[in-house]
Structures are given as C-alpha cells and as structure tokens.
Image (cartoon, rainbow, N blue to C red):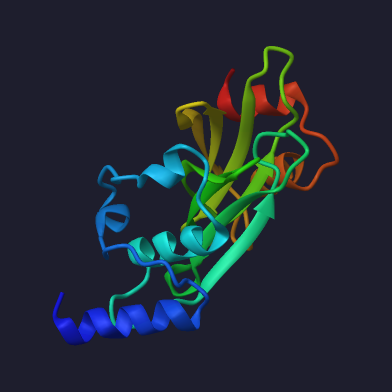
Length: 196
C-alpha cells in the first residue's frame, strides 16, 4: 500500500469510529486463513477494534468504510453477539460477516459467515449450537446451509439447494418459509431439506 493510501485508510477509520488500525489484508476476500489478532482470540477486543479489523479485511483500501453491525445471540447464552460486514460488498446473495462473541471483557472472533438470511436454532440438549443460513444467487437458486458453532468457530454440517424466491417453486418457497419464517424449525423439515 502506498503512503497516500495508508493515510486515507487511517483517516476513514477515524471517521467511522474505528480509531484502532490493523494492516489491510485481502485474506478474507480470497478465502485465505486469517491472522487473528490476540485481542480477538482472548476475547478482550473492543467494539472499535472489531470495526477497525473488519474494515481492514473487507473495506477497499482507499474508501471510507461503511460497516453494518447486526446483533444476534449466536450461541444462545442470552447476550447479543456481533456480525460486522462492509455494506458495499453486499449482493443479491447476501454479505460476508465477521462474527464476534460477546465476552465479559469484550469480543472474541468466531469466524466468518456469508448469508442473505440467518436463523439461530435453539441450543441442543448436548450443548451443540447450530444455525441456518440461506443465500440466493439467482432468481430461484438458493443454497441453505446448516452450520455448527463450537469453541473453534463455525463448521458446515450440511448444505442443500432449494428453488426459492420470485422464480422459485412452490415447494422450494414452502421449505424456505419453514426454515426461516416459521415460529420453530421442525426436525422433519431439517431432515427433508438436508437428509439428516
């Protein structure tokens, strides 16, 4: 990065309330392994640091970050966690969010989720925490994913394609509604969609 670009990134981070700075990296955009700063591993990162790190990974180097912050109880512990995304990266299929668990001392990095729709499922008796995401990449082509959250972050459990949306089928839209709009998600629907 040229010095003038670095100055613009630093100025943009200050303007967005992201006074902490992290070196810009395109690792998240390329799907590479992220080098997670210590404060995000030990759960002591501040909100400003979460914004700054997200901006360093997802924002254009010479553009002002326009971050979206979604609060969602990802681990069903009664505390809202954070999903932070760069709004200009959003598309019809959704957006890429960095997820942060709220800890007593700050925020801990959980991993990255890409979604257009998200539903956190009730915690299982075994303590397992799962969630559903959906991304529609075409008029009726939607990918639904069942993801588990554990101490190591997010792990794909199952993935399925359904035909939902404006150009979807009646059956595909019924399944999407049962997964994301119904009051509860039945085990029968999960089995029908994912075969498990």
